[in-house]
Image (cartoon, rainbow, N blue to C red; front, side, top):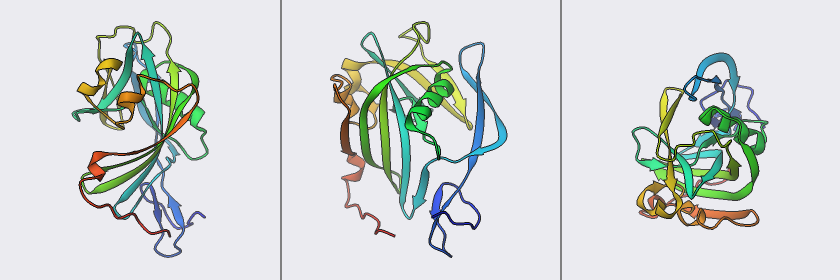
Length: 217
């Protein structure tokens, strides 16, 4: 049930009626600049992402694109962080995962990719600072047009909501030399499954101290 009272950033429990309440975040109207980077302006419309915070836990529903080319995989990071992850982002309320990955590829890379198939569904548990994260993610194999970001040695950038993202191609056989999250992808990308697989990954950051999972509400 959705709480009729107000809104907050993310999804939270209303202290009055104990029902979930949704928050809205601004929509980016993204086009492609002459340099191939995604550029955007904030519109008055709003879109609601499937994410919420409860106590010390943060929940995320995400889609990720596995983009491969000549033994390389395309990864991104938000500067100046040192960890890499797949292009993609959070799913919106009422949006299918297929539509979400299609939208994210256009926003992140400025091109339309071909969504080939689902590779993995993932439950990912990790901690950043004092916040524990519970992420549900779907990873799709995506093929870009041949002329889209063809230089495997080049880095490129885009900016969204004031955050600057760097994209780079990484050799699949050298992923152990970078910090790639979630960590199961380091080995999994060398051996793509023939059929979708489900993965439960608990990051080392969750193993350093006992984790108290929240009670059901």
